[in-house]
Length: 150
Image 1 (tube, rainbow, N blue to C red):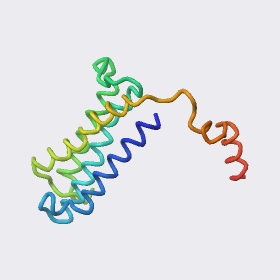
Image 2: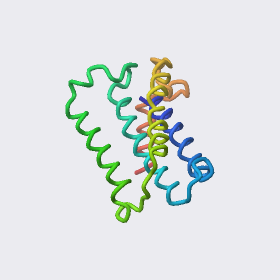
Image 3: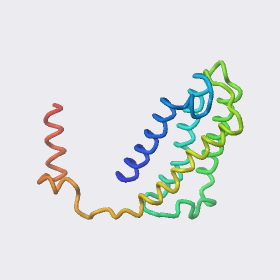
Image 4: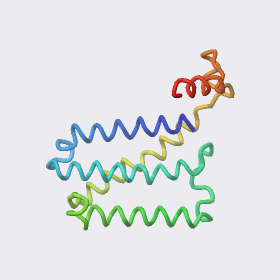
């Protein structure tokens, strides 16, 4: 699970920070549209990553997806609400309408989480916990942390 979290977080941070600092020149837009692109890309990354989170150790995240109606309903409603938020609730959400190309770029950025997730799942996970290499057992580490907090 940790490898998936770290990989997706690193990817999203890299992309979103790139958009933050170079988004205006990449898309040729003003600050308000850039903020909307960042917001939209962020939300869509979360939606697309939900597919990766369905099956943490399976490479085919779409296996049996048609049987999970609740999951599909949640994805569908999230996407509908995102479109409504970006395109129609300008004053409420402080967003700007996006062009088809900008929507496509956001979807492409988000969809990249699928192949990244697949590649990351190909990395073997060691049977030995990482703390053991540091000479610590996870229970001892947790006790030490709890004692420090108290």
